[in-house]
Amino acid sequence: MKFLILTVLAFHLSLAQVGITQKNSNQNILTANRLRFYSPNAQEALLKYQFTVEVTKAIQPTESEFKTAIEKQITFLFGAFSNQYRQAVPKADQQFQILKAYKVSNNTWRADYLYNGYILISQGPNTYSFYLPVNPFQVWQKSLAPGKTNPYPCTDSHYAVEKYFWYFFNPKSYGCELVENKDYAQVQGQVQFIINTKATYPEYERLFVNGELNFHILFGMDNSSLDWNPQSSTDLSAQSYRQLKKALVQWGYTSRVWSAQEVKNFFGNLGYFGQKPYVEELSKQTNNGTVKYRIFFGASTIYEGLAFQKFLSYSLQDSSIMLYAGHSGLGEYLNLDLMINNSNINNSPLKMTANQSRYQIYFFNSCSSYPYYNSQYFSLKKTAQDPKGTKNLDIITNGLSTLFIAIAPSSYALMQAVEIYATQNKKTSYQEIISKANSDNLIGINGDEDNN
Image (cartoon, rainbow, N blue to C red):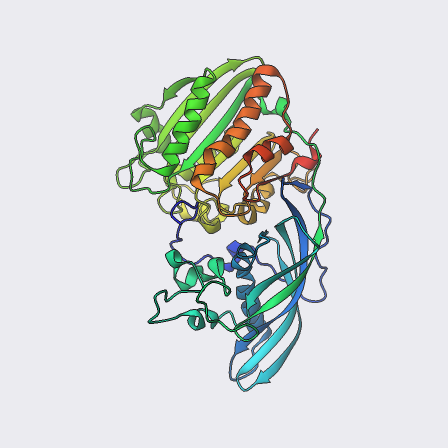
C-alpha cells in the first residue's frame, strides 16, 4: 500500500472538498451536455440512481439532517466504485434531491433521494451496480471485528480509521460481517455515456511564448523525512526524478541546479525542519524555440509544502505545461482554497491564479486526481468569452490509485510528444499520448475538444 500515491490526511476531508452539492426538487437536474473527454479504456458519463439513507433519532430528522446524512453516504461512492470489478470514480459536481422522508420504526427514519452526478467509468453496459451503507453514521462501528485476526475487515488495514472509511469501504471483502440489505444495500444505477473525443491535439504552437516553452515539473515527495536532494534521495519520487532527468540529458538538455542563494531568494525561509526544496533547470534550443524545464522536488503536503505551494503558484502563471507528480492527499494537497487559506508567505496570502491569456496543459499525475483537480482548475481560466475555461487549458488526470513506478513512464509520454514537436515539428495526438501514459488507472484528458 505504501507504493500507492495516497497519503493519510491530517484531518478528515470535508464534504465541500469532495464536491457534494445539493438541489431541491424544483431545481434542474444535470444533463449530459458536458465537456468531451478521452481515455483509452474509460468514458465520462452521467450516473443516475435512486436510493435511501437511514437516520437514527427519537424524533423526525429535519431536512438539513437528512441532507447531511445523504452527503455523508455519497462520500462512500469512492470506495463503492473502486472496489467493483468494473471500476469508476465520481467527479466533483454531484447533485441530489430528496423525494420523500418517512418513519420505519421507533427511532429509525429514512429519506429516499435521486442522485445525479458525473463519473469516469471503465467501458461497459449502461447500467452500474455498487454498494452503499444504509446508515452512514453507524456503518463504521458495525464493521469492526474486535478479537479477530483482522479487526478491520471491511476496509484497508493500512488506513483502518473511521475518517478514511469512505474511501476504502468494501463490504464484500474477506471477513467483513456487514449484513446486506441491513447494513448496506446494492444500488442500481443508470449510466448515460458522453462520447469520447477521437483525434485531438495539444495546441503545440501556442505552447511557445516569445520563442520559449516553459515545462514545469513538480515532484511531491513520498516521505518528506528523507533526503530532499533528488540526486541522492531514496524517496520514491526521487527515483522518478532521476529517470526523467536522464531522458532529458539523453535528448541533449543542459542542466543547471539552483544555487542555495537562488533557493533562498525565491522561497525565503520556506522549507521543512531545515530541509530546502531542490530546483533544477534543463534547457535546449530546438527548431521551434527554446524548451526549458524547471523541476521542483520537495514536500507537497498541505502543511509541509509551503515551498511547493509557492512554486505551484509561480507555475500557474509562468509555465506552458505544469506536471505534478506525487500524492493527491485525497484532494487536499493541490486544493486551491486550502492552499490559499493555509499560506502566509512573506506576510501576504498566496495567490493561486492561472495566466488566463496563456494556453496551458496541466497534468495531475497522482492518485485519483480526476475527482478533485478537474473542475477546480478549469475555473481558474473561466472568462465571459470562455465560460468553461477550456479555450486556454487542457487537463490530464488519473481516475484511480496510481503506483509511483508509473509516474516516470506516464510523464515521459507527454514530454516525448513535446520533444518530437519541438525538434521535428511533428504533432502527437492526445489519444496517442494518453494511450502511452495509461497504466490501467483511468487516465484521461479534458478540455481538448475545442483545440484548433
